[in-house]
Amino acid sequence: MKKVLYVGLDVHKESIVVATAPQGDTEAQLYGKIGGTLDALDKVIKKMARPDLELRFVYEAGPCGYVIYRHLKKQGYHCQVIAPSLIPTKASDRVKTDRRDARQLARLFRAGELTPI
Image (cartoon, rainbow, N blue to C red; front, side, top):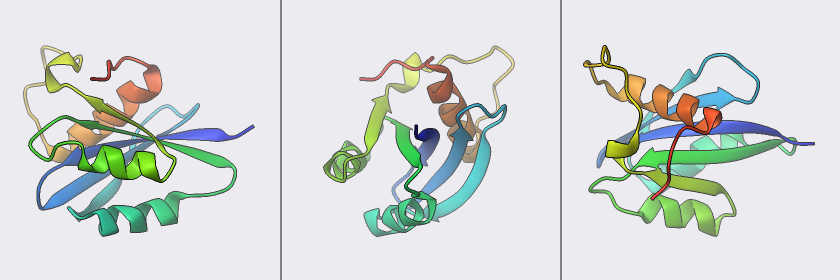
């Protein structure tokens, strides 16, 4: 049986911050910041991909649209786009950074607490 690696993407026009949350692990880990192109995303996917690992991606809907969603679906990956207003937040989480957002997306996706568009 394949293990699942949940990948949260905080997408911007010029960059994508990537975080991962392995199945059964306690914390989401920051993978890093990459360029905002599909080629840069493909390089990261190639590094992460293993035969015993299923990659599942999630990112917030935004001005970048569904380009990443369509690209990942065409490659056979599970991907969900989440409305920013549907992401559960704590009252104390007022500081927003790309790294926190990516880790939170991966963690909440793994927990099944996100509603796709």
